[in-house]
Length: 608
Ligand code: G6P
Image 1 (cartoon, rainbow, N blue to C red):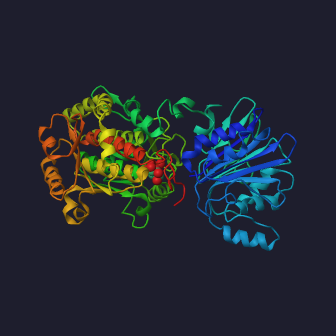
Image 2 (spheres, protein in one colour; image 1 turned 90 degrees about the horizontal axis):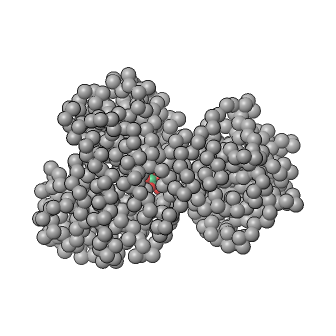
Image 3 (cartoon, protein in one colour; image 1 turned 180 degrees about the horizontal axis):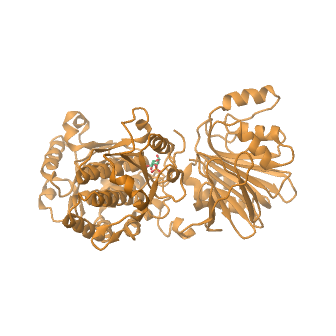
């Protein structure tokens, strides 16, 4: 949510910043801006409502020559998207510029105080107060002034601040919003995430909450807010800049759908040993895991749907209560949590404010917290006693695809590993599971092949008034996720429903304009699902079914069928969702939507 990038060094800062903003655009894209201290010592600011492309056009592809600057791409919280509210923001003197991700919760008080003190604030944003607070605190040293200003802020921030009169220096700070330092040869970077800078350096420092980073070309010092130097390790980003490029696909989403077989392989790498599952990341908490008597899963959006599979398996395999709760609700009615509770926080980005807050609450109450995330160094890992990474590589499209299937696969492995430790998973069951997991990447590949006709099918459904998705058991999370994909990128209404609930209300929505999408893969609940499918058919709804290869019955019943290979039921969610992702993709393309950056959304949501 909001992307930040800063650069100081020998390159031309303008193109570095614009390139970084394009790569960060999935974090928010309702306005964008850059600030530079030009070679002649002037502060240059350009900012525009709209996407980074609008800003680039305004700059005529020729930002002034400069060796230092900062940039921002915004997802609006305070103040509607406009040129004026776009970042960077400046102080009264026009020397200090600030970009910010997060929310300054006490900005109204600060604003009133600043105005009473003679400051003129031009925008409606919370961020602008920071520029003026730094202005008041500035006595010739930017890092000191930023530290002083931070003492006044409540809320969350990742900030980058620049002063015209210190033209090689950038100061960054973080509290509950991500910010990393990029350590180059004779050059330094600040960014919301590695995607913005990995083309220039793979050496990064993940800042901690409360850190203030003071950068000059090739040098950096990190202190706490009181100015005491703190030591932070340099990490190496394990993927290349190309991994975050479209690589010949029309959209990132399509590329990421096709990357799923490889992403599944990567997610399982090092975790399947012979005939068992083994997550080494859990070794430091084995003793605590041995004592758990319940499992609570917390997550938002797509990650929440993946977590439903995890909860079902923990319950089935361990024989202890397990459930999943939307993180934003978890806090309002927290379940009983103590040292015997395992809390699994699932978050692709590891930055989702709601999930982080819920994990923190669980940790404070003594739970053992495990993060399942794709982002090494992310905030959720700091709230957790152990972190299990998806290893799926960067996901750029706002609509999650490969991180959903790897979340499900990772949660299956997590539940199996703990069940193994509990001696509740028989050797035979584990052997069968491991064999099925090993087959999965090839089967995902086959699923994509089998989905060849989906573009044509999608074209026939693209004029629907809305969709009803149904599934039972492990088909239910796939139905929820399929419906979410349609909503997110085609802007059509879609409901994901437990198939058995269809008759208790939503069936009234079905007619010739509202098709039924049924996840009807081979399972113990297949026959019941078919009955629900027939209920829809009897209401004139067209039926698109996702079914297992070799199912001869379904062809007669459904209007259209997408085939998937046969697998174990807990893994069927992974294969069933793939045609639904492709279906949503082609419906959105047919409707002319902005697939990778759908309106109103952001890939990671760092506000509650
Ligand atoms: C946002 C994204 C969703 C995502 C959700 C949770 O709303 O648009 O695609 O599922 O956040 O994100 P997380 O990073 O915690 O998995």
